[in-house]
Length: 129
Image (cartoon, rainbow, N blue to C red):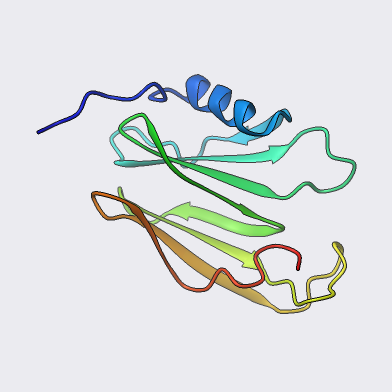
């Protein structure tokens, strides 16, 4: 049984959704919003942050939001398949200041399983402690 598409099938509708979730305007990267991909990803960074405001990733399947995750400092992100997406980020250890993550880098893979968004790899240190 195929469900009808949700309300976020276009980039503008997904951006509107992202803005409604935080109340802060974002700058968007739509490089991971690929025609024909099952998993669509909208990458957002706050546009009015006093400093670097972090990275937010909004995940959509068939026009429906299926997950959101934020990182204090994502380094790279890419679609790895029509159902996979990975983020490499700077790892914050407890007590690290915003400027200076000291835990190296880590990569996490997000995958749409057909029913839910799953992760593999550690998210530890993705945000400030």
